[in-house]
Amino acid sequence: LRGSQGLDSVVVKLGGSVITHKNVPRSYRPVVVKRLAGAMASAGVPVVVVHGGGSFGHPLAKRYGLSSRPTKSPRGVGETRNAMLELDLKVCASLASAGLHPYTLSPFPPAAGDRELIQGLLGDGATPVTFGDVVHDREGFRVLSGDTICAELSRLLGASRCVMAMDVDGALDAEGEVIPELDEEGAQKVRPSGASDVTGGISFKLKEAVRMASGGTEVRLVSGLRPAEFSKALRGLDFHGTRIRLSARAQRG
Ligand code: IP8
Image (cartoon, rainbow, N blue to C red; front, side, top):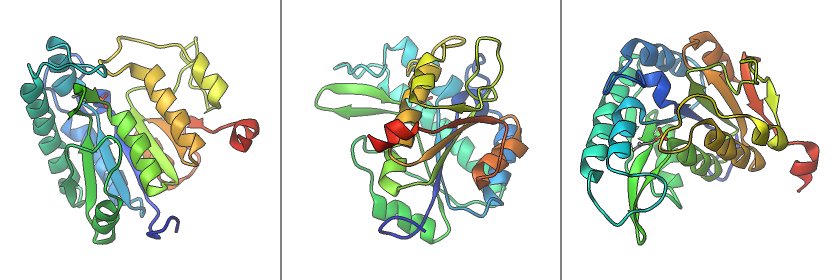
């Protein structure tokens, strides 16, 4: 038990490349998500779910020039958000089919979430769900990545762990082998692989992971296509993947 509200929780990111086929527009992967939902339902820890955009959000964001850089034009914002809501309905259906009680919160306030609401939902047996979204502030519209939301939520809830499910086994070295553990220096050296999202791919994910680690949340990158490993990561057991931990020097600040 941690934090002022008492309840410890694990923040889970379901990456867009896990829950959809990245290269086929609007292709949801129900079997994959149901397996992960089953692991969450039986993990015995309260979970807050954040999902990415995959082939629902990203192609539209790209088409309309929406990114992490704000734009004053509202063109394509509604269409992109609708695609995200459509994906969210599917994710929630999969979570429910595994016995969870998903409760979607959108849009996520970028600066401060509502801790009491989230803790209250968890306390009453629901699974708060949110997702990478198009948000608006004085500077205009911008894409808020699910990875950033994970970092904000982890801080807000004082989460002990954040498990990020990806379509690869974790952070990979130049030979494509998984790197079991990374500190902040190592994280900076990981080279990007594959095509980047509008929100920045692995480099951006690692930046947010380091931010979480520096706030005391252990970050675990694991394959979402290996439910057994995902389950171990969730429960705090040894798993095949990457752990982000800060060096003692960085922890001392
Ligand atoms: O896939 C981006 O979320 P992410 C969401 O977590 C949109 O970076 C709207 C493209």
